[in-house]
Image (cartoon, rainbow over all chains, first blue to last red):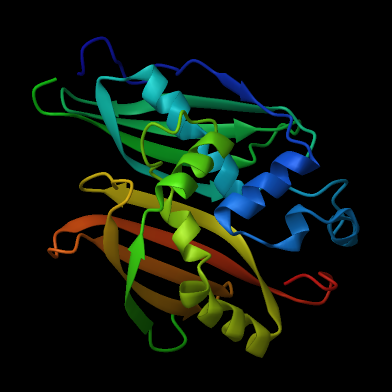
Length: 134
Length: 131
């Protein structure tokens, strides 16, 4: 096991958002993801959404600061997720995680992003590795 | 289930623009002190990489919906450095998907990172004018 890390440990939750239209437009510009679904209320309504969805990649990337803050003595080397259901503009998002495996050199974490719905919008995983000499 | 041969693209020489990496970090809650692990998502929207996806979707009359994404690293990206990116795209039928695998290598050929992007291909009907 890695120091005090145990299988089943929960990461401290991080709350992000709510993201407004300006925040989604800024992310679209910076990332180059110009899919209008994230920016256009009418288009979102056409597929039954009450508001445009937050970019899944914006949510996935938001785990990185959380994970670095949780274990600064480890390096994040893997990050991935399935985008399960839309988390919409205006929703507060809770990022959480749980340790699935841990050793002296590596930690594997299950990640969740919840909006206002009970079902997670994103289920992901991350691998953190201890740098040599740390 | 694959329905046609994978399409290989590249290598593309792409640079981690420091200003863009910092902006991407800030927009995703970071401190802009290092290049985010997920920064290659920016490259995947680059026209040189994404135009073949747009062309395929137009031909099939579908809209790509981001279904999953993963990144794995050997060494971190460095702001200002350039990398060679090779891409392999393959289409699956059940369900209809496009899977984009990218490998990122340093200019000396050493492996740096891999990413997998899975796009569900949804019929355009119901999406209106989405692209």
